[in-house]
Amino acid sequence: MKILIVIDQFDDANNGTTISAKRFAEGLINLGHEVYIVSTGEPKENKYVVKKMPLPIIVSKIIKSQGMTFAIPNKDILREAISKVDVVHFYMPFVLSYEALKIAEELKVPRTAAFHVQPENITYTIALGKNEKVNDKIYDFFRDKFFNRFKHIHCPSNFIANELKKHGYTAKTYVISNGVGEDFKYRKNDKKEEFKDKFVITMIGRLSNEKRQDLIFEAISKSKYNNKIQLVLAGSGPKYNKYKKLGEKLINKPVIQFFDKEHLLELLGMTDLYIHSADAEIEAISCIEAFACGIVPIIANSPKSATPQFALDERSLFEAGNSDDLAKKIDYWIENELERKQMEIKYAEHAESYRIEKSMKKIEGMFEDAIREYRGN
Image (cartoon, rainbow, N blue to C red; front, top):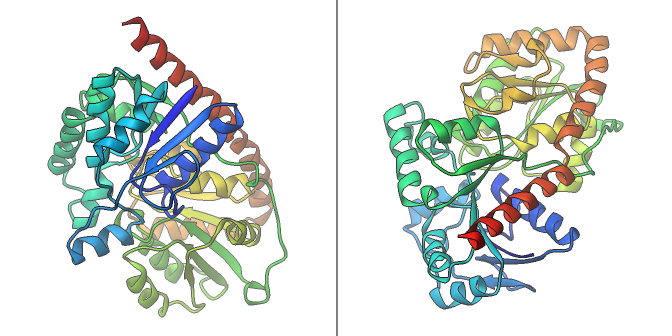
């Protein structure tokens, strides 16, 4: 197949959607398909480049801090790219995709979409994350403007597939994990000097409101073992300065920075416990990466998050938004090292269900269904 991926940002792997797109592109190429990209960034082979959308300075800072870029559609470029492929796959429900979808419809080229932008990703940024009316309005807007013009939608989790059905989305949903690569496997590294004699707790993800890293700071300060806990927040985002300030209250100064893949793997090999505290999450590939490396997770049991699906039992769940409960779970795993070591093996085995190779075969099947159905019509 010749497959075109339409996505606003593809070059910088600083957000989950871009990371997923890059992995899927690579995986499809490995399966023998021709993959083309329309996106902003640098020109490369089989990539069509469009310009970044200029935004007011304040808005631009917010968007950039979230690891995002918006693209300006170029009709000539889009028409050229779409006319040469068998199927077009859309990642973001924004202006670039709206224009590309019109052209795909006009040219009668089969098309599919992925649902990666949870309304809460937007509303938490403007302090309206728990406002159900606003979140519902965004679901409705995405549905009517974009997603109900598709017959096939990739959903990274059952949770988000159910949310789409609940909000009146009519397409067939394909629940396919974004998938974890083979580099993320059981590993235990010797701790570097500054982590020696420390119990290392890590969370990977954007430093943003919906990820709720603030709860981890609170929970560590309440832990009986706060003097031995070393916190690492692997990510960047708009809450960086706030979290640096919160970190001054902890006995051990936290490490807060973005890690490339090589250093992330090194970090995970030194991590004793992984926490995923997000209130809203479509899947959280970072959590899978962590437990694939043999790290027991503690996950916020939020009704707006898919991540609780990964917990093997209640010991790996805490009440969302409750730092007291999180502190109790942290203390439990510190005090029960033998149980933690046993569960590390089970979680690493659990991750095998989410390998990228399995996801590739499923996404390939979705594209084949779309091509067959559109051609049949």
